[in-house]
Image (cartoon, rainbow, N blue to C red; front, top):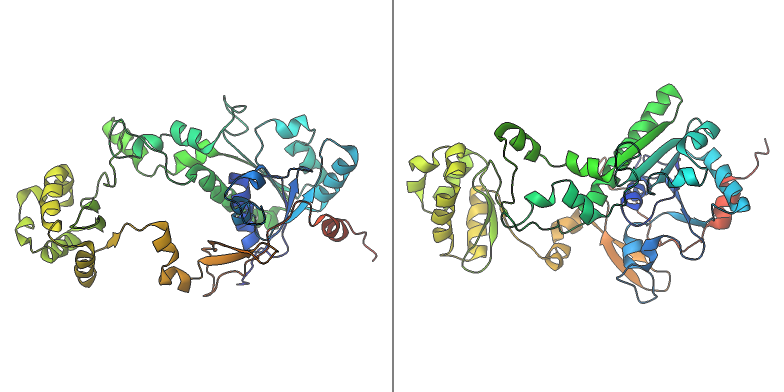
Length: 386
């Protein structure tokens, strides 16, 4: 497979802030030519979000817009509007994450653009979708985490919900968006026709609730926050040691037996409270007490070494600086340095995609507002001479 399998795919990117830009970041990393259409003067809202590099550029913006090209167009002004429509005629994909109805108000609806370019794949990423009873409602990640139920199962206990520590609803929507777009591109090779994609942040977050829905459907009781504990696998959580917490995931009976051996607690293997995973889950409080008492006797490093030797899945709870220093992630190519164009640099996460043993080559450039205007016009709108 080519290291940039989407090479040759032309994407018009009208998105801003996070969900849409993350979607188009994935496409750009995989080789698509992503042209970011921005407002003259200010551009993507994220250009004003901190933290900032020494030259004043937004590190937030840089981390999710690498490898894209920027053109500033005022879609309410006739000349820029015509330029935009000419670009639409030559695009494979258009991605926007405006509130539902915004593109219609600009007389740039999905229907009208797809009539101009029947092969166009039009992807609309919004908070609540373009069909339903709340399509005009504004959405931010924290709002969607609350409405989706995700926040109700995240936290240390009932009545103490917390936001997931990253804007996961935005990120999920970006990932689902990229999958939908690539699927539509594949489908177009057969049909020759484009696709209109309607993705809602709320839908995407609900789709990622894993077993919370099935637990409610079978038990009739709404799940609540469990801290680090898993609702149906035990032990599968964080435990305190003499100096720092660690996580232990003994996901089957064999691992449970191995864990007991590591702790010199073979008595627990035949304890009727803990014979099966179901028993251990039912009596999780007793189990936590038994394991916690033993684990408190040694340091986290000591226990992690013992558990690793026995093949029991476990890990320290690392801080971000510890993650950045991880040699395994470095060996996987998961760190990428951006160039601010003035001698400065910015460390960002690399691409998780590995194909045929290698990651796609990533751009180090941070697109300046309207930086690629003439390049885009000349390359996309050049008159065929043949």
